[in-house]
Image (cartoon, rainbow, N blue to C red):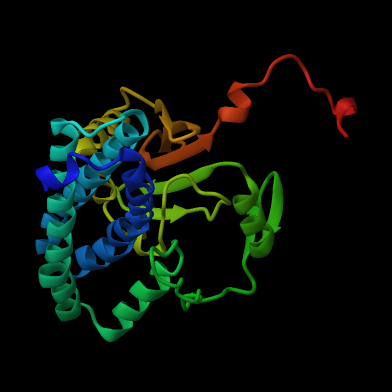
Length: 279
């Protein structure tokens, strides 16, 4: 590969490697749909974290290659090696999926569970194939549902409209560190699938960051902290992330709320815009 790439124009390679980034939804579906289903049926599937890390490393390497191809006029040895490492890792993941992961899934999951995997996968973008038709899961409806509080009363439809309209991604973790709920916000920043309901929150994060998750949860439990805040630049977005400890009136820990918001527009605000200025 080294000799064959030395004289290739980076501008020829750039659109090809940029297109490879469209493969990201494939990894997203595996991490957020297939992994949770497998974890629920067999405790031995903890090794999936290794594949998650390999997928993230492969995506990072591809991002590095694309950024370099934008700037360079000629391929140097380091970039050629990065390209070789990328293809070695990407093809390695394909082999691990086809020879191990998918075979294990077919052995462990029932036809009904496999159907749920297909339904949940349709919630995400497709890559290099036609999107799957979206179907609804069989969720028991409660027509008499009302949300009653001292500050008001909402029907289920009204509550769902509110939770979907607020400009926040929220995910609720219970006191046992299991994912209990997430809202279906428009333009969600981080992917979520119904398959994660009941999943240990540690399995929703790459292995490299699990120790931080443990530290946050431990601090919430021992009451040394009530919240944790982070902000990151992600592509062209400025993302604010906040974790809040939930406690009952007696102060007992009842879980954690993750709140995520895209704040680029808010961060850029200057001066005032009053109600009477609206048009």
